[in-house]
Image (cartoon, rainbow, N blue to C red):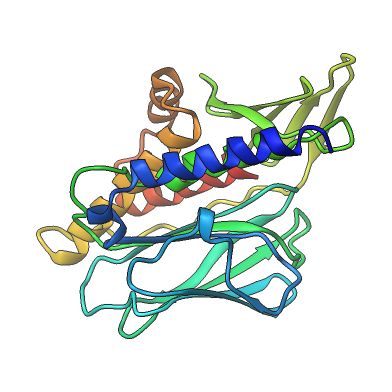
Length: 277
C-alpha cells in the first residue's frame, strides 16, 4: 500500500514522542501496554507502544472479554498503586476488575463488554502506576497519546472512521467528532449521532438508575489521601482526553458539583468511559 511507508514513519515518530514524554525516572513508576490482539490467548504486546522498565509484559486472554495483564517484576510493597484502562477502537467498553501490586508482578484483571452488557473481545490500553512519579508525564498521558494511533493507522477509505476530537459540552454531555465528519453526542442513557449527510440518529442503550448513597469519605487518613489522589488523576485523564481544552474541563466541573468524594470518583470514571467509548 502506497501510504504504508509514510504511516510507519508517523508511528515511529509517535513512539519517540511517547518516550520523550515519559523519561526513565517516570517509567520506573509507570508501566503501560497497548493490547492489540484481542483474540490471542497469550502474547507480549507491541514494544513500541508498551513499556515496563522492571521487566516484560504479558497479556492473557482468559475468556471472551476477560484479560489479565502481567507487568513482570513491577510489583512492589508500596501503597497507592493506580490503574487506568480504556477500550481502543470499536464500540466496546473496558473496565478494571481488580489488580494486585504486590511483588513480584503487578497484575491487572480487565473485562470488556458491548453496549448490551455482553462480554466482548476488545483491544485496550492499560497503565499501572505508583504515586509520586516525579516531573514529566502526567496521569492519563497514555490515554492522551494512544488514540492518535487510530488516526495514523488509517490507510484509505476502507478503514473505519476514527475519533479526532473529544470535548465536554456545557450541558455535561460529551461530544466526539470523527474523521469522516460524523458527530456523536453522549449523555445519560443514550447518544445522538449526526452523520456527514445530515441524518440524525438517536439511540438509547440503558435506563439510568439512582446510585446507592455512598459512605462519608474518611478524613485525615492514608485512605483519604489515596482517594483524593485517585480523583485528581481521573480529572487529569479527562483533561488529556479532551486535548487539554480548558473549556471542556470547566464545563465538566461546573456540572460535577459533587462534594462527596466517592460520587466524584464515580462521575469522573463515567465521563472517561463516555469519552473513550
